[in-house]
Structure formats: C-alpha cells, structure tokens
Length: 230
Image (cartoon, rainbow, N blue to C red; front, side, top):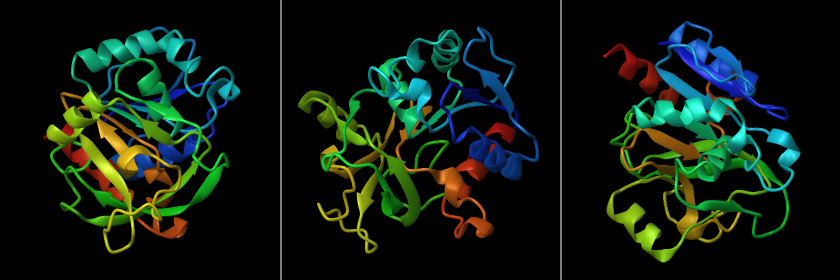
C-alpha cells in the first residue's frame, strides 16, 4: 500500500503515523508538505495530529485552506480513503469532508491520557478489523475534542451508522464519566456518507506497537493495508 501523510506547520504526530504505516505496509509513506498542490499516486491519505498553524484562529481552520487540501478534497471526491487523526479530524470538519465541529473541551483543559473506546461501526475500511462493540484502549491528547453537531445531522449519523467510535467505560458502557471532553453522545470518531473518510480524536498510531504499551490501534492500519491489496 502506498500512502501519503500531509504535514502542516505545527504537525507533531506525522512521524508517529509514518512509523505505524510503514510497520503495517512495509512501505514508508510520502510526507507531503502543505504548500504542495499535487499528491503522489497513493491508496490512502492521512492527516495527522498536532497543532497546525499553532491552532490560531480555530483548530484546523487555517490548515483546511492550505494549498494541498484542494488535492485532498479532490481525492476524497474520487473515493480515496482519508484518515484524519485528532487535529486531522478538526481539519476534515473545517474543510467540509466531515460534518460537525470540534469545540473546546468541556473542562477547558488539555486532556492527555488513555481512554476506552467502544467500536460502533465495523463496516468501513478503517474499522473492519475490529468486532462490533469491542472495547479498545487508545490515547487522547487534545484541547479541542468536544464534538458537536446539530440535531438533524446527529440523527443522520446515528441512522446511517456513521459514528465509528464512542468513549466508553472498560466494560463498554457509555457514560458521562467515560467522556474526556464533553463530546456529544460520547462521539470519538465519525465516518463520511460514503464511509471512506474517517475522523477520530484518539491516536491509534500511539498504540500500534508493543513497545508503546499496546497494539489496539494496529488493526486500523492493518485493515487499510489489506483493503488496498484486495
């Protein structure tokens, strides 16, 4: 599988994603600087976490208007899989590839810790290696991860099974206690209408190797590699 990681000023998880993709695919991804206007021929695009443009104005808002994003949007329109992690999720909402917004955490503090997630949707390229209702442990590290959208969009997301992950207790129960940021209905990840774009606030690349303390994030990257090979 050939992949590309988009790098913005302030990206700080781009190398982590690079390592995870190389481990799953055996091929190092292309690292594409935000000022580029074209993408190499790839099977997957990842927008990594970090603080693009220092989170000035609004998280992801400036990155969403970088020159490379026109090519990313065009690729998404052609059905190419796009994965946005943390700040990448924010960028995907800001450029219109995913609905909703990521607001300031309800506690108004940066949250950096492992959380438990319940897998809600397994019928996507990103999540098909997980079992329905499986609970996985993935780290979060964000200040603006409070997902919100209007009632109509929320009903559509639920009705179409487009909520990929929810923050949960380790037994899978969805509770306020399990929610690290106040996100609406404990939403941690959202799929696009065609299920080929995923935005997720937790960082699967940070638990994709035993040396990192766990491998619950590895199946996401392995599944993408298998899908590209099919």
